[in-house]
Length: 181
Image (cartoon, rainbow, N blue to C red):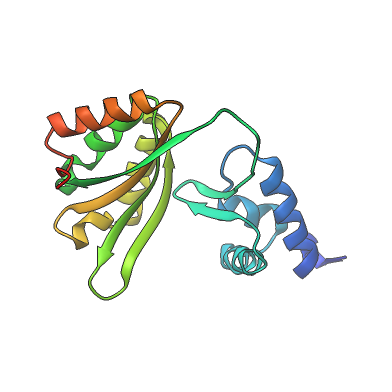
């Protein structure tokens, strides 16, 4: 069912969004999905919210929307690390992590009013880090760590514990890792 201008309507559009997200191995931006369905990006944001409310495992990342597929794959190891550094050191911190083949899944801060605030960033390599940096600059956004004097958490994920240990040592050597006490 289509309206003039090939605008895809309501439930049909949400079904298509779900199908496209499930088929894509990389994130799809709201702008891309809006263009494909001939609606505004805000309509897509609302559709994604409706799909999430139906318990569809969709994650909004800095690169677009991802359908969180449960695929049997190699075992992944994850760790939550506590870091502190300046905004200017953010890109060096992220590159240090991805250079070991480790994914930065998210960043979390503890806000005095809102509690834990988490942003899914899903950075796997230097290209992802560069895109993330460009997006922050283009939108004039602030890094979450700016709200907490540089203190933040990352969930990191790798194929081995050794990679996670190597990242922690490298971050510690640069003074970015908060000591466990």
